[in-house]
View (tube, rainbow, N blue to C red):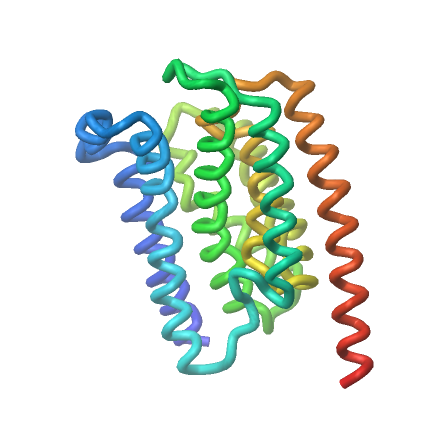
Length: 249
């Protein structure tokens, strides 16, 4: 138990420190990055914000693996199904296109924005599901998801912004509910990429800086409906195939 919380603390300190240096642009790196080609600037600034989580997670996972075997991986129990899930929103958003302030073709920008966002979500999911859910898998589910949700909320440091108490409480509730919902996907698939797909939908619908002002609510709902329906069909088939494998062995 003591080693567990030391690993969690190590992960959290690295995740908060590195990610928020870039999220809040503490050292004003963004002004230098603007000198890069537009698409590189867009991806770099976005991915740096998630870098702390994946760095902290990979270090903590190394220590965890010295103690016991871990189950989570990028593709989980099916590489093909994970990749199909990831391709679906990329295709949809590239076709729809995303209006942007960089004067780029909306379809090209849509592809860049959704791909960059998915990579960002994978970075985060390595932390919250790939490491933290794996670390806490032996405790009761309600304690596990409550802890993950709270730490996920804490990492954002929303309470240091101008957000109201109500906004913070709503955001905390979202993180706890999201931890439970996305956590169920990971339990079924063992796939960080699959969990990143559902994280991606949250980004598109609510928070994502690259996309949120470039598509309207109707377009968001189309992406949500088509993606989620297809994903659930894939996951149901995935679960059946895994059940057959277990029975056969």
